[in-house]
Length: 302
Image 1 (cartoon, rainbow, N blue to C red):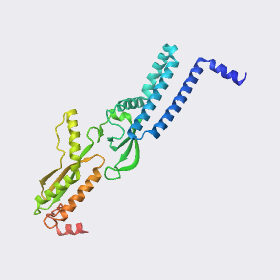
Image 2 (cartoon, one colour):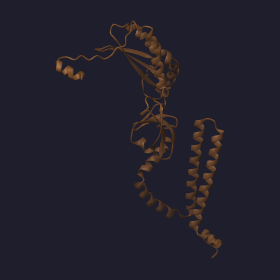
Image 3 (cartoon, helix red, strand yellow):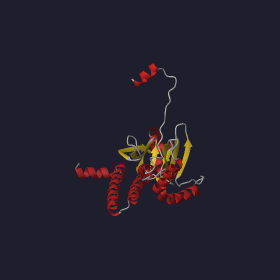
Image 4 (cartoon, one colour):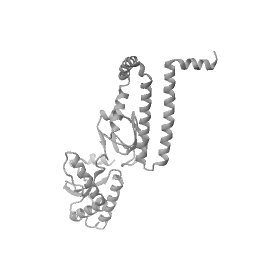
């Protein structure tokens, strides 16, 4: 039997012909999808739109492949049903984590928990969502050994099943702003009224431009959820302690600019305090030791 006779004999087998058809369709669909994704990468400038269009094409490719597989066995539905029933029970038990992850992906596709570009905290990991796959979410991590909300360069992949098991913290979903605070101790005897004025003016200078934007977004937030109307304008409060007067500056900032906003506010505060260094002195915690013997004092010094 020649090679061509063997090929003809193989193609005459219904099962082999169906498998061959499936392979051809999968290859063609994969090539077409990748080609269209490459065209989108060159033609679409907006990063968010480009990402979503690529994901949509990939999803359509999966759907077409599934339809072809089902259609190829459409004349044997009874056998296919039994086969899928038996196989499905075993697969569901062995791959339950994978199935839950796929369910999580379906949920995430509707933007229920987070979307690409959001900053989230998943199981103690904080980062920006850079991709949502069928099984895993990919994050560009922030923080950890890097202080502040800056990238540390580490890419983290979290199973999508996580969204059904643990809380999901979203820093940017409906209200892309955060409240942050700076505490400043002032010694007793300092001109606290002037200090309060300096802190208020500094906070207004740094976050004043965001107040109107954040108020508009908060109004939408209040309409959507049962939540009270919060103050987004800067607020300076004071508390009296046993060692000093402690001021707390509360201000609004963009969720991606918390570190730079705190830096700018600190510089504004220092510039204001330098002009009144003779009347405003920063405080510090003092520790008073009572009832210690001279021997104990020598041991502490050594």
